[in-house]
Length: 445
View 1 (cartoon, rainbow, N blue to C red):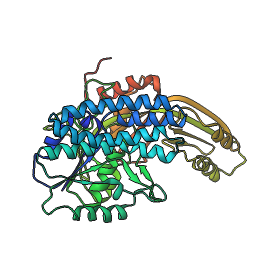
View 2: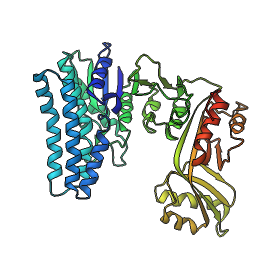
View 3: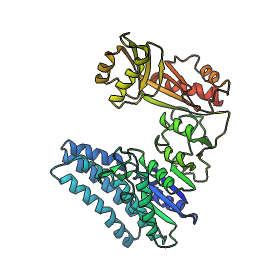
View 4: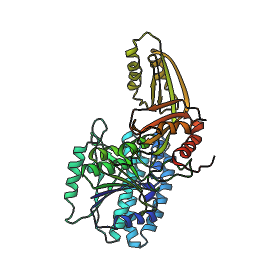
């Protein structure tokens, strides 16, 4: 069994949906296909929710009307036969009728907002199932709202997911080889419609693949796998063909946009390979993420923006052994994760993914000592086989940055990552310098 997830750009139009249908029907193996909302849909739905929260009904309806026209046009292209179009548009229009009713309602709550956000994926699966029916292909829908659930800590309830997903599959006609389901959406522990957060379609795919012990999980996007640097800043990038789960996790967390940071964990726990593939170039090998990897080499570089560095110097009123713990407890109290850390006996520097230090956090830290912050920074993450026995990799990285001021270096917290903190203004030239030194890329200056 394979799980195949297709992102928003992969189902962005009638042409793309038809192309995905070609891909998922090309072989006869059992497949569960996870679909995102059509590109641009979730952003439009989010904006509709924002407008309704602000009591701007007219603006919300304007956005909804524009979205409806887009879907009507794509539905006509996907179903050129008038009879097929009538059946498909009836399904699609039900969603827009539902959304219009919410827009006209007297009140709007967070529960309504979650219901709105779920409609993008529901539209994609409805259109795909109808299109497959027109092709004469037997495919069964697996409604995500009937099996995907989070617990009271907002974490996926894998036991519930497995039990209810297996039950849904068992109801399918004997011999069914193709199943279609929605990414991103779920119910929470109280039964309300919710979601797995932005990028959650990747999470849906790895959760489904993990609980069913799939042979492989495929994440299809519009790029040929994970590249060794950010192609938005560096021209001479190339795909990385093999990554360890930990390497992929580090790259995703520190800015590689192709993969959602949390999605790799379910697959890693069960040792299920994840393959990143390009919908526009399906014959390309992409990137395989597994427990195996190419050893003794640096694989890739990624960057995480919007970073603030905070330095706290002890007021010496605390014992040395309690100072750092007190600092961490302030961030824990405000649920703010820390990315990088450097410390001495009496001071600690750390980074947070915020444009500035929140005032309530600053007040808590000032009870422990003097507080300084530096804003508009970027974390550059270099990933590869960074075990301590591999002498020389650290020197190569630092040599690349001999003309770039570095605020902080983090090494040793992982066998796969060395992180550097630089000014956001130095981001591009840092990425270029690392590509020249580590990958021999002929990058423009």
